[in-house]
Amino acid sequence: MEYILQQPVVASIGAEKYKCTIEWHHGKFITDEPEFAGGKDAGPDPYTLLLSSLGACTITTLRMYIDRKGWDIPQIAIALNMYFKLEGEKKITVIDRDLNFLSPVTDEQRDRLVQIAKVCPVSKILEGEIQVRAFAYTETTVEDKHTYTNGEVTVQWRPELCKHAARCATQLPQVFNPAAKPWVNMEGATSKEISDQVGRCPTGALSMAEKKQ
Image 1 (cartoon, rainbow, N blue to C red):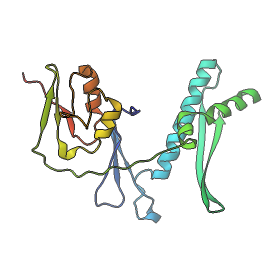
Image 2 (image 1 turned 120 degrees about the vertical axis):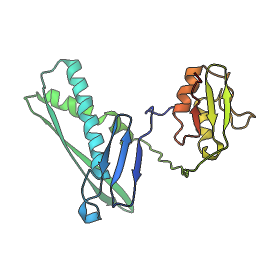
Image 3 (image 1 turned 60 degrees about the horizontal axis):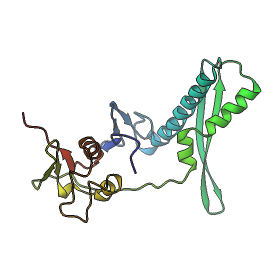
């Protein structure tokens, strides 16, 4: 198992209702709730972000396909919205996408592009089987620190912050084995593989020690 993103998306919120800061690898932006929900409408709400993700993925996938085909379709727009309905006791979410090609397209092209839109990566995620997991930890000052080295790189481990040892064991089992003592085998993989895995740690329990000059 390997995460899609090299760095996790980080969301944080303070006491101000309901302003959230979203950090990604290249910057940050603000989300909020609409005024009727108690927010100030200072940024997109979570439903808008969900639709934006699907919309961006849809038209990007279409652009890639159009360019590969060499079709003359210079601009694409998409409008998205969603609603909920009940089928018996089951709540169903329905998302509608309205594609608008701002230049003439043939019926055959239109039908093909609708089919391509349905299989964009985010569509597959939303319509596939999803597991959403949650882990919790508390920021704290930690003095207990263990170090492991292969002579080339050194890994620092703070056990009090460690909440995801099983992930490391799944992603790089030849190095990380919670059942072993020591649980980190620095000879089990290359320095780059170890460094990449340490970089995926979401809690800061694992880090790379800086080389002494």
